[in-house]
Length: 368
Ligand code: G6P
Image 1: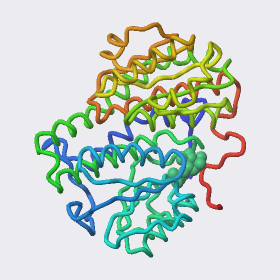
Image 2 (image 1 turned 45 degrees about the horizontal axis):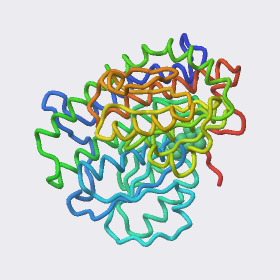
Image 3 (image 1 turned 180 degrees about the vertical axis):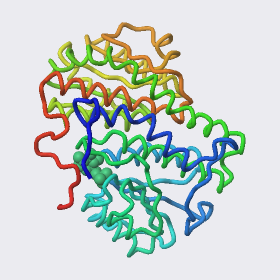
Image 4 (image 1 turned 90 degrees about the vertical axis):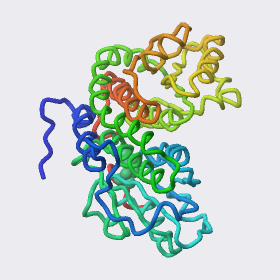
């Protein structure tokens, strides 16, 4: 296999831009677009309605996709979800009741800690379901069932398209779980599936903000530290934004739940540290806005990533506002992933960093 950058300077740029296409391909695999319902292309060796718990483990960006799905499984299917980074899960000897579901998320399907966690869960009598991008991988072979992401080969060390495809598959699974457990009506399922079908188009819209983000990246590149804030599903996205930025630009960045601001990070706020707030207009929007006011009151410079309604209602001065198209709150994280990827990418490119091969990092960590 010889990877081709096409007309892009870096694989990462190509992979960011490919997302509308690969997310579209992935979702078409899991939903019946005409009926507006999820149709899983796999036979599950368990029934969601019998589950008392789902345990998720993964590493890096895949872990953050899992963390977003926790909100979905709990909200749509009312199943308690436990989630850990695989390096912790594999050694903490978690008690597991046989017959529950252990879910693993991995682009490569070869990450050593995730694989070890999978083997532990399997020995504990769990049903093992893996969301993987490489169907011939070790994890795929050792799972009871796999749900493939159809992202295609991802070359950039910093994961982008694999992440949004993981989210797509995880949401389809959460919807299927909600239906099986009777917690999601056919009507609500159709609303969410229709929203999911609209995601590739919204991602294309999001990519159109690239020029604005590129200019903003010059400001971000001057920072020594950057704080990312979000609530609900925007909280894992804040973690992902910080992870992307530090991986490729080497700027120190931290993601925080916006509600935790008062419990520490507020002490760091000054005009030198950009605060990136991810806040689509959802049920926790007002709460996040009040956290933004606390940042603004202390002279913090805010970059707000929101949607059209959020931009109208935020009502405060920001250094910049990146406006996403409106999306159903359930699918919003898939759309809002795009600007955080672009911001990390352009910051690193502006700083002259090796975006596709960042120092000290590997695409797949197959040793502990
Ligand atoms: C490495 C990569 C990340 C990836 C993580 C998990 O750290 O640099 O991009 O998210 O491994 O990899 P996996 O293949 O299990 O998704």
